[in-house]
Amino acid sequence: MSKRIEKQINSFKYNGESIKFTLGTLILTGLCVLLIIVATFTQITIKHPYFPMDTFTFLSQDVSEYEILHHFIKKYKYIPQIPVVFFIVALLGRNFGILSVLLYIALGLFFPVFALGGGLSYMFEYGFGYILAFVPAIFFAGTLLKGRTDFLRVFLISIIGVLIIHVLGILYMLFIASLRNASMDLVVSWISSQSGVQILYDIFFSIAGIFIGRQVRKLVWVVMC
Image 1: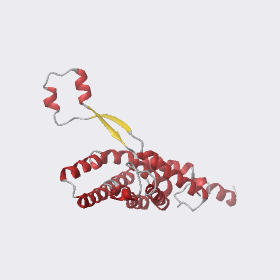
Image 2: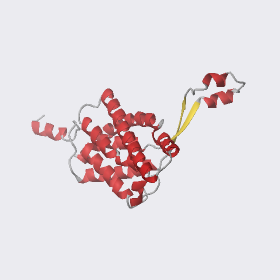
Image 3: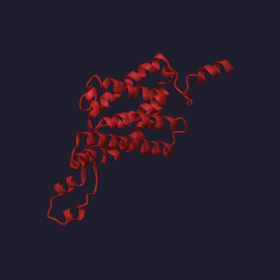
Image 4: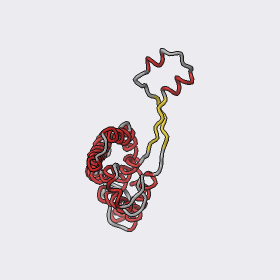
């Protein structure tokens, strides 16, 4: 095989290169913005076994098998927005991943594409900080994803990236709460609902999102290069 033919074949393979600015890349960026919007309004019911604090007290009571079964099954309504963000950075890389989120934010400041609506007034909503935090999280994740994508690296990226989103989201929430003179009970309730057990689900699904995004990147590399 000549070097010229080998070079042409290799140009269609993904070998960890950075994405170039092409029409295909822009189309994929637009589709990723749409994907974030879809994820924002998608709710998944997750069921899994768990052991609550009152396990031994509960079992000591006269309860039926049906009650036992449902007592140890956790149901959680999950919105997969954060894993989708990590899927996008794994697919598009740091720069185009940030562009996707910035386009989503800009769109939301004029149209109701956020969870609770949209418009400029949304900047004063408690949850807006989580959306803004997507940008530094993508910057961090996209920078580290330029190297290997072994499980340990992806695991650490997911943990730190998700924590960046939640910590900055909580800080922004506290800032808005101080402007509104909100009660501490309300603040604690918001933090619990937005950053309680949600963090664990975000980490788990973000790991999956990164691996899936990396595989999809290889499949659509011809379009992006």
